[in-house]
Image 1 (cartoon, rainbow, N blue to C red):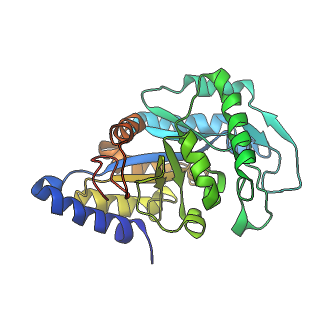
Image 2: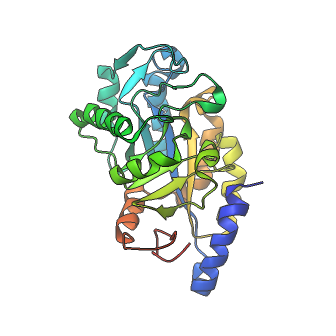
Image 3: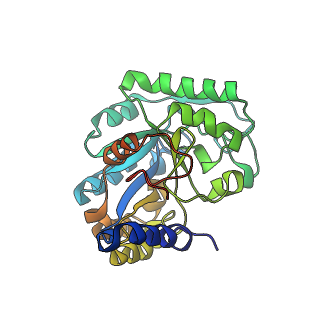
Length: 291
């Protein structure tokens, strides 16, 4: 089974030890990504997925002192899982206000497509991007960035809705963003890749099980990585809507454990910029050395 611990952490930890010796042992650097605000169901079910519920989530993160990246939707769809539906709305004033209030030193922003509308009905194929040509993909990105620009948001990170995009679209995304994210659903389209790694003109940063899931699923793996002192950038993906369903308790338990090891996304982006030198194989953004 391909997962983060066996297929990413184990070989990268061995490589660090081979290069750095005793200096390889260090706390992991967790990069917490959160999907998404506004929630893709914010129009359909505002009581469960509206702005006030997200305010509660952010308050918990802030109280724990955990920085994170929020994947931002420029538009909110009606029935986003129905490819035949066409209705969408712009961000409401309350949503725009909240985004403007999030502290820049603790919260980074990623572009989460345009409206999260899937182009395919099958749950196994949900994607806003798959099937679009290069020009259409560029237009979608242009539209999304243009709608966030009045909020002074200029994301350097792309978070694909449903974690799915075609392999042929990667270069389009990599030309526009410093970091392109992915998840378990990306494996069928791009293969299983170590994370993070330079791929073309951007760093590819997929997150895999068990660091991708509900807080209660992430917690045991996070503890093991802390105990192992792996010293790696380790991407964690949480969905605040899932944590709301668990009444936040599992989230609070996770944050109490990982808070001392969580890194700011700006620090990761600085490492990406520092390692942006011509290379011929995947490398660790923290050192520029081959991964």
